[in-house]
Image (cartoon, rainbow, N blue to C red; front, side, top):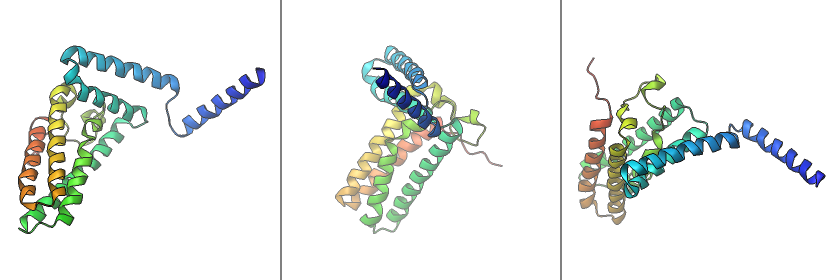
Length: 202
């Protein structure tokens, strides 16, 4: 028993050392974080009801996971901006291809897929502490974190529109891609209208 206990202790110390090296939070830290996330989820359930909570609760947990993974607010902001630029580039590629009048499915499909895949993760890109308080330039307004219910609804609408565009592109029917792309653009605009700072003229 003594040998087994000693071996377990050595393993625990080795695992803790590895966690520190990889910047993985200690178990006690993760336990505290999980407790905080659980309180947040229960608060949302109490406020909005279970059905509405499914998407929001998932976002709370996922956003917490970003923090637990060791990302600072500034890191999360930079990561978010990189993903958003990738989505914007894919959207532009689709729009430019549609303007040719002879859209090539080989161009449309991979970009539609990229947008749909990224859109699924939008709720995880906005953990608390990744807004203007980082001191970095960002268009994300504080209302994102104070009105999570509507923000999650808008994000969900983008996800649905992106999935529809991806499905339409997958059929190869380019005549339907235009309307689907327009629907996605409207969903994105609706979200940006409330949650993104407007460009200021110099």
